[in-house]
Length: 279
Image 1 (spheres, rainbow, N blue to C red):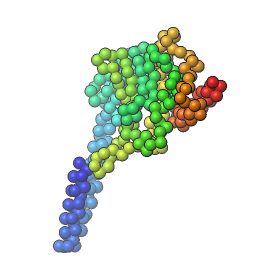
Image 2 (image 1 turned 120 degrees about the horizontal axis):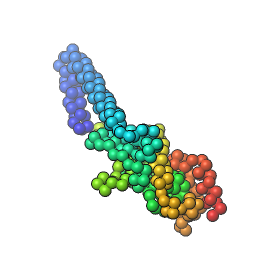
Image 3 (image 1 turned 135 degrees about the vertical axis):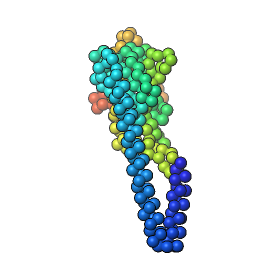
Image 4 (image 1 turned 30 degrees about the vertical axis):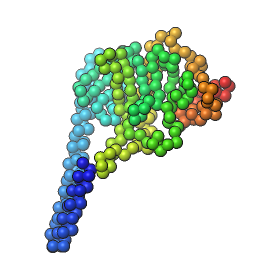
């Protein structure tokens, strides 16, 4: 599509240049007409985009309003406006709205089995029920080292400093449709060939998306912890472990990366740092 627009623009430009050679007045009229056409097309595209956005927002609002026995205390509408996640803290329930298929699904806290932060299809951190790390506070040093939490965020390759998509992946107790995705950021600016421009991790849009997704991931992790049988959850102190092939310096570096990414709070960072130094 982008190539066709480029070719079309070149043909118009060539035609205008030809018009100038035949008649300056004709060339000027063609040029003015071309500019007017571009402005009109841009306004039309922006209007259509605004209408689509408003329609999606209204659809999600209508779906939320139709929920019965569900009082929304927290909510997040996905970046692409195709879905939403809602929380009813009084009734201890989580609701997923999917506007594109006109479906709403409500689950109790106990039916939330797993939560993950996924960047371009790669899990960078996760919490699951009935596991050794079930209910662990996000940002803690989990079994396997801090590297298991950040999942390669500290890499030096350029490709690892850019992303196209960030999703919250939630697994629920539903055998027909167990996996739910809520989008928190998508690269929506495209080049002339229609390919998206990756979003750099120092971009404010990325940082804002990470702040939001960390909130919801941490929140769902706490819900898993709250409903996890006591005998299945190890204390955080017992989960701290530095693999033999990693030095304390390596772990401290990764903890610092977690802190800079906003996954760790200052208090959690200092606490885990002290544990590593005293181990």
